[in-house]
Image (tube, rainbow, N blue to C red; front, side, top):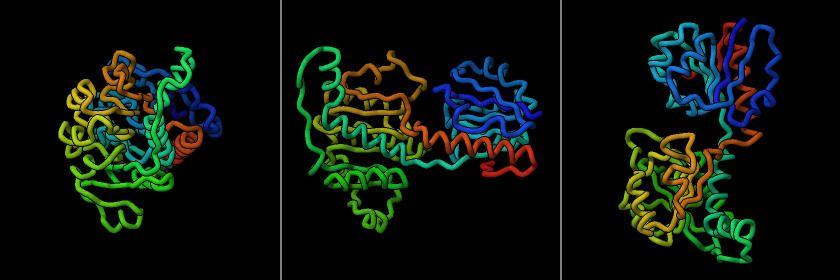
Length: 316
């Protein structure tokens, strides 16, 4: 019998998204709490032959992988997971597999944040529900405003098209932007500085790497200005966090909507979560019932295929 741990089930819903009892050769244990302590994580996972993980919620560095003698397989949601040390997995002979990742949920979430910022949704809601104030603030139109997209990949293109559909002017920049793709999408390719200077809202859709860490700093945020807003549903470290806090504190930047944080899970003690110019959501851009159905059903298929000797969707 193959013993499998399903980690990071924060919603306590994983069991409802797939038929986990479909194979008599597999047995599953679902863990819904975050385990930040490495020694505790190793102790809990020692009995298991395989592990299912949700994105980068739980890191698997070499220290953890080498401490799990029974471990044969890690299955992650999505097609990549930078929190898994793939070299360590290869050295140990541990196979790492993935799933498909629909992606549109994150694009929808990003545009929802843009709309909430523009219409000042949080003070409106809190004013009525908490402060008993009718019409405390006034929002703005999105139509006619300029949306800057940092990273015109799969998600950035979807957000760009949502902006175009509502009547926004859309600009795009990335270090390797395909101008023909920009034209085909209906957006204008510009330099990074021009994007921040001209945009009312900037939405980030960039992969985190050593090259992109701190990609957006005080210079860019200052160009966006006191009436500008930035939305981050990618990774927190793409923005220089200290520069971001300085610009928010001084009002050099109008505001931030973020779904991602340097340390997760974040809580109300986090400086960004607590900041009055920040609209924060708990990294749920990809968390929809439809997306989780894909993740967990394909995760189950990967476990079944591995048990039968034919791994699928192998990353490493």
